[in-house]
Image 1 (tube, rainbow, N blue to C red):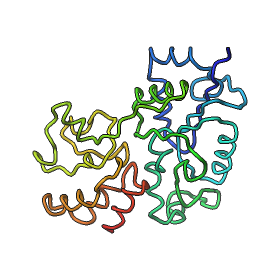
Image 2 (image 1 turned 120 degrees about the vertical axis):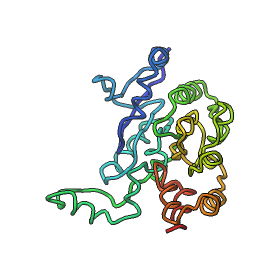
Image 3 (image 1 turned 90 degrees about the vertical axis):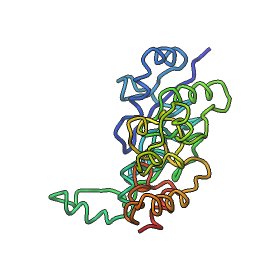
Image 4 (image 1 turned 60 degrees about the vertical axis):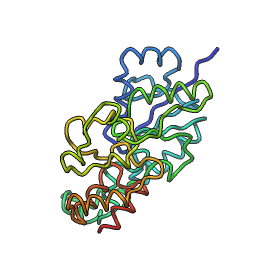
Length: 256
C-alpha cells in the first residue's frame, strides 16, 4: 500500500517551523516511516512533483509571485496545514502592514526600484482554503507530530485551546504580572510553548497567537490602570509576532 505523500513548503519566513520538524529527532524516523517525503527542500534534494496528500506550509505571502505559488500548492494538495505565526497570522514581517513599505525600501536599498514586494504580509488563509492552522513562533514539535498523525488517520487533531496562564499554573510558575508587575499576554495567548517566557520571569510575547475568545480589552485596561502602561506601550504589546491576527491587530490599533 502506497504511503501518503507529504510536502513541506516555505514562503516568507525564517525556516524555524520547518526546523521544528527536523528537530523531532527520534520521532522524525517514525514520520519518515509513515509517509513518503516527496517534497521538502530544507531536508532533501529529492523533490518530486505532486499531487500530495498532505502539505505543510510555513511563511506568509509577501510577493505577487508567492501569491500565485500558493494557489498551485492548494491545487496539488489534498490537505493543507499552515505552521507557525508567519503562515497563520503574517508573522513579525506583518508589522510592515502598519507602515509605508515604499519608505522602508527607499531607506534600506540603494536601488529600491529593484524591490518587488507587496505592501502587506498576509497569512496563507487569506489566499486559499486551509484545513488546519498550527500556531507558534516556532511551533511546538509535539503538536506538529499530533497534527500530522491526526490527518494521516482521518481524525481531528488534539491541540488544546487553553491559554498560557494554564501552563503557568501547571508548572507552578508565579504570575509575572501579579508578582513582578511585568506586562504579559499570557491571559489572551494560545498555549503550546510551556509558558517559556514566564518561567524566566518575562511576560509572554504572544508567540502562539490569540486564544479563542480573548478578552484583549480587559488585559489592556489592566496594563494601563494597574501597571501604568502608556497607550504606546499597550500598542507595542499587541503588535508583535502575531500583530496581524485580528484580535491583536484591533486592540493594538485602538491604542494608536
